[in-house]
Image (cartoon, rainbow, N blue to C red):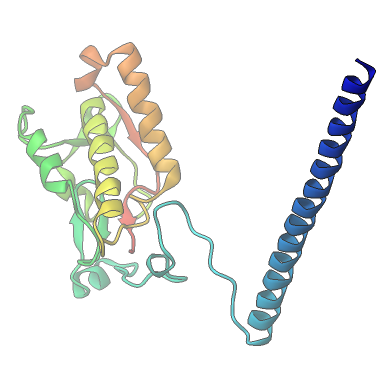
Length: 224
């Protein structure tokens, strides 16, 4: 019996020694690999720095370096004359002048939905509650930048829906250019928050009420 236990102890010691040796080898290999990776990265950094290569520009999810120019490639300028000369059109969805290169996805559908309203198109007003009607979206096209307007909750809901659809279309269609208003993170978050809120409480009769105020910088020019 003593011999048997002694044999087991020796076997355990042999296995322990074997595992320790293997762990040491694995550790050495991993350490070596890490050092090689670190040296390689450092060498690459030094070479790029010496050659004057700039670090890649950071950009948001879904965009590529080629799609994020340091300055806007296409712009409508800052006056109505410049906008017309550059072939820009007033977009019903963003209520901004867009260059012809920018995506206008969803604008047609947005206007089609409005035909079911009593006026046949989305209407806008100067004051909350529907005082001093401005007219359809075309009436906003010549208002000075910084003008404010009011519209219905129904228009607001459909605006947000098609703005989000435009973002998705641009993200999944190669070559599509998205204007800065449509690609705004703050605007996307605002729309999602509003849609969730309305879904939770139910818009009901508020759909036809003139209770939504356009921000002071909503009307103007943009670029893509």
